[in-house]
Length: 516
Ligand code: FAD
Ligand code: DLZ
Ligand code: SF4
Image 1 (tube, rainbow, N blue to C red):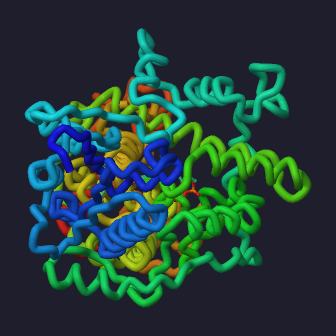
Image 2 (tube, rainbow, N blue to C red):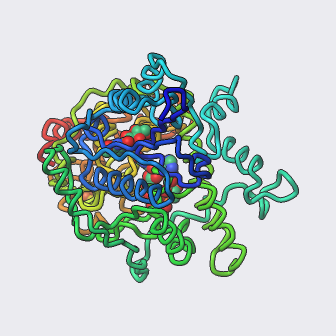
């Protein structure tokens, strides 16, 4: 090869597995793609073993697909001798070794990696280019521009803007189909005893070799895996199969039981598409288009409120969280509105607690690297907030434990929606509850060691006293919030002895938090 010939190195990150990207439209022999399993990505959190395996296996399959299409691919495995274990050093070494004249990468979704690659390219002596991932509906700054000059960041306004802009469930240009933008009030019921959700579609991927390599490298991970029968989709075919399964069997009841929680039912009517979406094996547009097409084909099978609820999660919440992330980082990662300082209880890492709701949600997370939204928000998140845990500790847990956890969507949901550490950017009030809500939405309380109806005394449910303790200790920050002022009226009207007993009970529980 002559010295003048253009040679391009293109870096593909582990969450950029979008085969429909324009990079892959034509085979070009002057282009080489590189993918790498690196310690900079495996070690920034205490990841669930299924998360690391999921990323590596999906990356390996994606590389194989590219090779089969005749693209040039360099794949660096975790234990390869020449693995320099981070993106910049590895790319630099390849550029020198193979005399690349150009370097290209797609915009990373994570602020940390974005900065890392910016610094790398600034020092590069060759030409470089940054491209869009061609995955999301929105540009990074779109939400910031949409809310420019506004005091609040209401998801509902953004959602309506998205529906109109992309003509999703819209008629006459700017009107919502069926006359209403949001059908949430028809959703969210407890699961009746006689309703048995369909068994979740799981895959049986053999990932034993990857597990072996992870063990060999002595990666620190949490959770368990059946590496002979890895349950998560690892390629586009499996992701589309999961999407079809969801539309056929779960979408008809998705909205209705979106917030329901039942022991032993880990997936209910949820899609479990978040991993496939976040690593870009499938696109939000194709998910929404297929769901909407199924509704139009069989409107008697899929009621509109179920469809609208699902579409809102993807074109609404998912794009909204991404927009908040890019608008507010890096300051977002430092926010701690309540100045919470407590440590996360040890049993978050083991599930060994007598509280049935937490035991179920945590053990399920350790087993499957998955919990559905309301378990994350109203069980593990709720308790951490009531217990005054530092948002850094809460973030570290969520970032590690879930297969779909990537900073942009984890931190906005955890620090923002769940911990209200952003002081109300994402949510208008903190998501906290006593046992009343948990009992209303789940069947955890019936078999719990604690008594859901007791606020104080032996075996009183910890949520009940911690709930009032949370409001009491944060009165200066919350009493003026119009959505919760009412709670303070209740608190103020309570008898002084009852209030004191609740606060004493909460103090006792906080002191012995690791024994709960
Ligand atoms: P479904 O219930 O089937 O919903 C469909 C899709 O909608 C999801 O796949 C997801 O892409 C999208 N979606 C739904 N809710 C949200 C939301 N609040 N924000 C963004 N997208 C949403 N989601 C992640 O993808 N990664 C995370 O790390 C993550 N961390 C979370 C932490 C906390 C504390 C909370 C409360 C929520 C978190 N979520 C996260 C959002 C949500 O819980 C998950 O997207 C969802 O549980 C994934 O399961 P599913 O695919 O079965 O979702
Ligand atoms: C999550 C993850 C893990 C565990 N390992 C890798 C890896 O070895 N190589 C890689 O390219 N990506 C990995 N990822 C995903 C990255 O963390 C993700 O691409 C960045 O955070 C950008 O969003
Ligand atoms: Fe959770 Fe309290 Fe219900 Fe037990 S009684 S399951 S701790 S809410």
